[in-house]
Image (cartoon, rainbow, N blue to C red):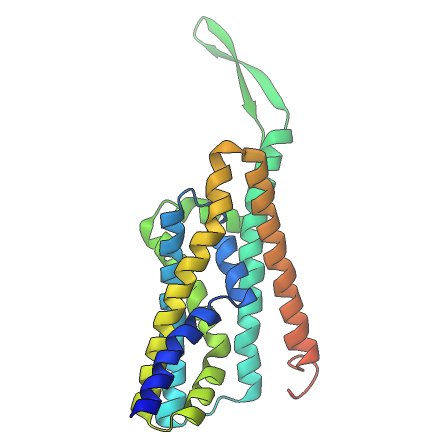
Length: 251
């Protein structure tokens, strides 16, 4: 019994290590880029980790308990969903920066307005329409449910990418399905803890600069968006071309 227990406990630390994977760090950094409080960012990390864990347990459990075999092309497609998610998150951040630039450089127009005998002028800005993604983010941004579901959904998508590989490694090390499921749960708890720490650390520069150094904060948000898009495009190339999802049978 000691060996399975040791492996399961090891899963907690491997889960924390898993939270530091580059795609995970970039995703949560992009999400918390507009957070004003580190505590709120840490909660986002917990929600991300819960979503990730739910997918790991669902997909990994099916592999371990029922012997489900995930075809290589389907596995690559699930990994591709992570790349597309990173690009989407980056676009959301860049759309916010673009909106700010538009409002900053758009000239102010002064028009006369008359109410009865009272004639006065009113200044306003003719700003361009926001990007669709930004409008959705802004309109739903004040809803607590939306704020919770967004990192949860991103975590679920990220869990799809590595769940099958994690389950196969567990099955090779722990033949007993019950101990295997226990490992996945402990691994998920470790991932949740790790993501809480990662998001809190990632949010520190954003939370510190948002009110003190607005220009620096905007550059940080811009950098997080560009990094998310760039890494997402890199993953699309690697998965689609190098690993063969677009060009032929996966190697």
